[in-house]
Length: 93
Image (cartoon, rainbow, N blue to C red):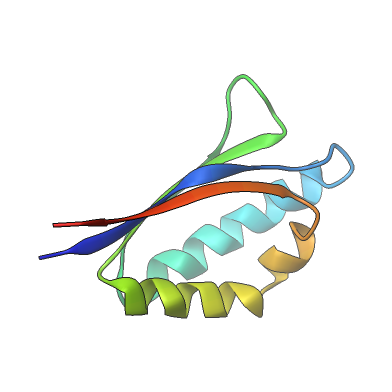
């Protein structure tokens, strides 16, 4: 079965750091509840406190698309709107 992997990181400003850390807890919980989300890991980088690493697995592209749509309407997007994003998406077999 093919799945979709999204991995990467965001860099936030020091002004947004505390808000991002608080909202990340909710973002993780909501993401894990999504239909088609197989794995969702996110954590603050141990060497750079402004960096947050993500590793996500979804059942298929449709599940990833639904995740992205939910995020577009979320508080998470509002608190990370100014974050620098670095992600790659890969289909697996």
